[in-house]
Length: 171
Image 1: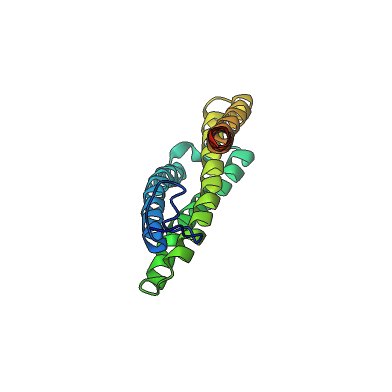
Image 2 (image 1 turned 90 degrees about the horizontal axis):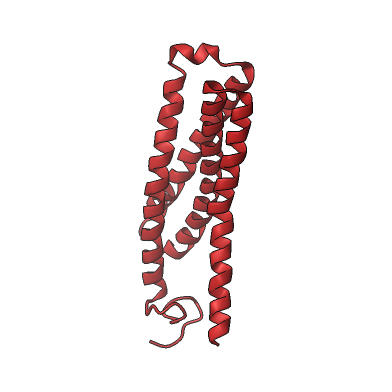
């Protein structure tokens, strides 16, 4: 296959595929990511919904209740974002818009990762704050924020930089 600047069959990543084949492959990869994200979101959402019906829910102070409400809202947003690409696919099915769908869905997935990161950090903070104390909750908040930032933002950036450096060294 000849070089194609549109992204299909360009051989830059060792693949020989058309733009449509690439879109199909990328869509499948996005769906796998969404499945993992949705499972995590469902677990966190289920936990949050169960909390409100526990006898000790009334023992929460105002800050904990406010955090809880924010977390429920984040869980709803995360769920909506995770389902948006599927709804878009259904609305656009058969209209030959998959490359555009993949591009927009990938952006939605990135936004959803930020929301899920905030949700995970918040749930961790709420649990530690409620079960131990406020200082421990703040420590948990900082630790979770550092961990999520390191693993979800810094590490991929470092890996991209190292791959770019390796590519430049072989040229």
